[in-house]
Every structure is written in structure tokens, then in C-alpha cells.
Length: 114
Length: 108
Image (cartoon, rainbow over all chains, first blue to last red):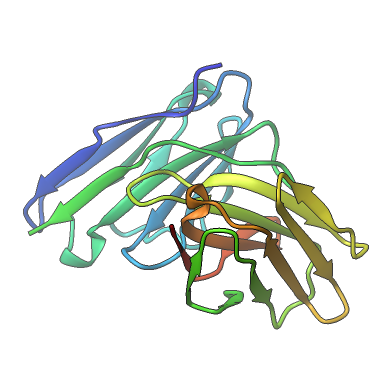
């Protein structure tokens, strides 16, 4: 079974530029998550989708971050414009359904904003 | 509210045991444990649900005390492969809130 795929793996941009990350979850997984993990900290949920609807985006900085999950499969997360404090690893995860289910994480995208 | 993990870091010799604690100021419905090796994605270890159930995964087990609002992860006879950062995640409002992590190093 293929795991969660993410691209790119690494990205370096200057502040005020924009960037987009892509995630392809495990086939059949209805729930998709985007997490931000700053060095030395635990993952912080940015947004959670159930199929193509948003379940929780309370911690998404909506003035600069946006995410979509068209057709309930792939998802993209965009940052525009980026700030220095956005430097982090962005992890995508998926699970069969929401709730008390095991989450499978992708390898992440390491973003450096200079 | 982010759960609090202790200790922050621990160094073991192969074969030694360790306990990692996770406590929350909010009522717990479930606790998830993950391990993350350096530069890799977090990997699921186990979920514990309300009821004080103890679960096991190889030589790693965990308990959940909903009254005390805490969970503990037990690593028995540690192996080099156990090295990594361990995160607990507590379910709050349908989403997982992760602790700050406990870095475990197992030396030969």
C-alpha cells in the first residue's frame, strides 16, 4: 500500500514570496490533515478535511495560508506572502475517517524562509 | 490546550527501561502515541481510549488514567531502534493536540 506522498521535499524562498505544497493521501482515506512542525516542537494542526469539506481550520492563519482539497483526494496548502516565522516542516497526514483513527504521515516539506 | 510531556529528554543504555508521561489539564477521551525519528515523519504507535485500558506494541506499552488526565508510555528492555522523539496527542474537540515531545536516545 502506497503511503502519503508530499512534494516538494524541500523549499527555500524569500520572505513575501508565495509557495505551495502538494499532498496525495492514502487511497480511500476520507480525512486529510495539514500540520506545521516547528523545530523542536510537536506537530500543530493547521486544517482538517473530511472528504472535500473543512472540519477544522481554527489554527490556520487565514490572512496568508489557504488550503483546498478538490474532489476529496489531493490537497494543496499555499502560503502567500511568506514570513520568516513560517519556516517549518509541513506535514500532511491522512486517516480512514476522522476521530480516533490512526493517522498516517507523509515525509513532509521542509520550508526555509530567508 | 497542549498536553505536557515529561521528561523532555532521556538517555538510556540498551536493555534499560523508560517511562514517558503525558498529562493534560483538560478531560481526556483518547490519547495517541507517535514516534518520530530525526528527519522522518511521525509513526503511529498506539491509541488508548477512555477506560484505563493498557495497550501493548512489542515491548512498548501504555496506560491511560482518565481520572488523573494522564497517560504513560512504557519502553521495556530498550533497543537502539527505539531512539527518536515520542509525542503524545490528546483528543480535544475532535482534533489531536500534540505535546512538545520527549527525546529518547538509546546507546549501545
